[in-house]
Structure formats: C-alpha cells, structure tokens
Length: 139
Image 1 (cartoon, rainbow, N blue to C red):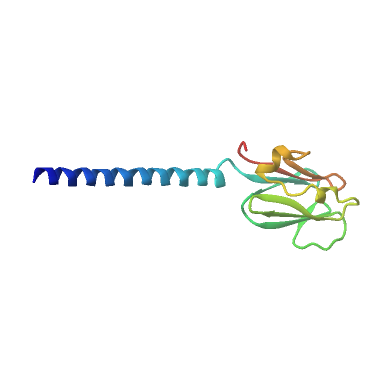
Image 2 (image 1 turned 135 degrees about the vertical axis):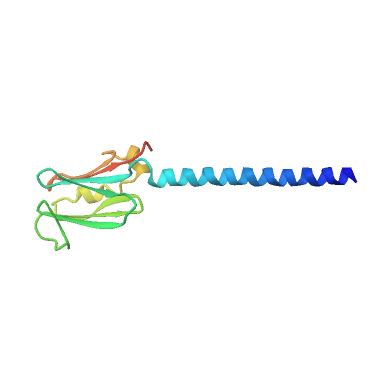
C-alpha cells in the first residue's frame, strides 16, 4: 500500500515540476518577444526644414508628408515634397519630387538591414534636406 502512495506522490511531483518548467519557459519567451518589439527605443527620427526633428515609433503605421520643409496633411506632388511611410518596424521614402529619386531607391530601413545598407541607419533626400534615421537597440 505504501508503495502505491509513494508512486502517486512521485508522479504528482514530476507533473508539478514539468508544469513549472513550462511556465518559466513561456515567461522567458514572452519577455524576449516584448523586449525585442518595444524595448530599446526603436523609432525613426526624421529631420527636415531648418533643423526640425520629429520622432515616430517604428511600430505605429503612418504616412508623413513633408512639403517645402513643413509637415502637411496630404501629398499633392507640388513643391519640394517627400512622402515617408512607416509600417511594421520599417520606414521608406514612398514618393519624392526630387530630380533623381535616389532617396526612394534606398529601399526600406529596418533594424535587420542597418548594417547591410550603404548609408547604414539613414535614408537621405539631399536635394530637399530630408533624412530618416533608425534609432534602435543594438541589432
């Protein structure tokens, strides 16, 4: 009889330990995901006009239109205009009225591409004086 009780106790302890290990593993995974997604101030810093700086969260989808050195509501394609898109941790120059569109050809700027890009953490539209900088945690 005592043998049966000991087996039940051992089985219960093994189940409890397994549940505790799974709980800790799940907590670690959740912490790592949240740290990767929201930690380390991941944002895009946009410079334009006469030294104006605007910062936007890398994970909040938005379109920013800068015309003649000022943020405006809608793109018209007139004047010195840049349309910047931020989505899912990436930013890119969607449209620009500059002559050669080199800023548009620089592609999307993301944490995982910073070290592979010719301009690193930057997208620059030199003719309009507009730049996008990725500011994030050591990736």
